[in-house]
Length: 302
Image (cartoon, rainbow, N blue to C red; front, top):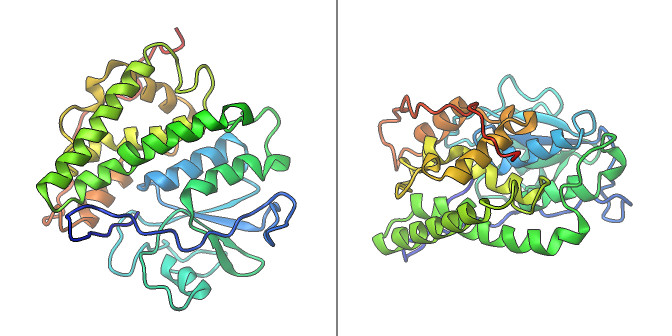
């Protein structure tokens, strides 16, 4: 996760530095081979959780390795507990600088390391999940869901663009704003989209109908953090997730799927945000709440 402020008080996300592609046919120079790549993630980060969910849904656990960083990030960046046994790195920054010694930005997750060429291939989080879905198909488990079906891609892409701008990134625009008008602009857009999604989910189980797609994965990781972090820490407090009957039931429905619930770690989420962002929460105190039961029946199958 990255933050950058500009003169208007509006938050601007740092561009992704590494954008090479892994391809099924290897035409990019990075073929989709089993055992070659290592995915670095944080349970705290919504962008990283997306990649963990997709990796598990598609059965790629034995195909793409996984390394989880510590949830507390300091000026040295993300720490890898006990050093990464594959790369030997103690901090994710070591892998960024090994790939580009001149790199001066934030060291972000998720990112993928190539054990063959010993360099980072990508930290381009929007494309990491779609790469798993479209380029690693030969390695998907039997019966794996099609999370990015070709016939639905235009609709998925259109919806993802709105959700990214106003919801996924919208909470950061609100939380990291340093001007009142920038904050209110972000919050108004965020809740306008949440209101639209609440209505959309009144007539369908998932965003695109009766199957989970890439769009649901992208929305879920923001919803999972909403009441625990964004509502209070980022001042997105017009309404809570639990105040939306359809969105709240939808989020619990997804949480009941092991790939979603098993990668949702509220301890990591809360400790990261409340301790790392000292300019927002100077004391570093982590709140005990909210007391929310994500396992209550969702009844979305109706």
